Length: 166
Image (cartoon, rainbow, N blue to C red; front, side, top):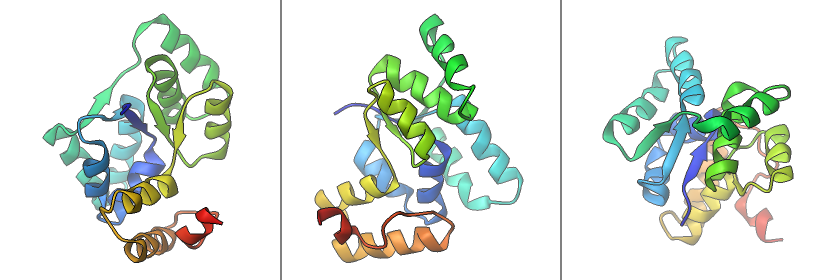
């Protein structure tokens, strides 16, 4: 199974709902974020969002890993993507595109850019759905988690995981 690289929105959705354990269970030792994304997380913590501190703990625990841009190709792609995306999303796509990682993002523009580059994608809802399929949580728990994320500020195009199977 390939590595997954998270943008700040997706990983924050799980941190803010105390369900980062789902990411650990699904992606342990294959979960990454870039140094640019980590700066965004640190800024969130510094602005008073203490629940994001579990991301720092996950990095210290080692199941979540921080990575930086490596090599000329990643840096050139990052620079190009930075014209239309934030540094976090641009760095994740540059890494995913060059290393064959799955990019976890809910940002439409970032997902479109990644798709153009043929980068594999997932997002908050896809991860919840995968956790249900793997039986880490049941469908009712998945739907409750989705509702909790929506209450926490996540914009979701669906209200229930049942809409995925339609």
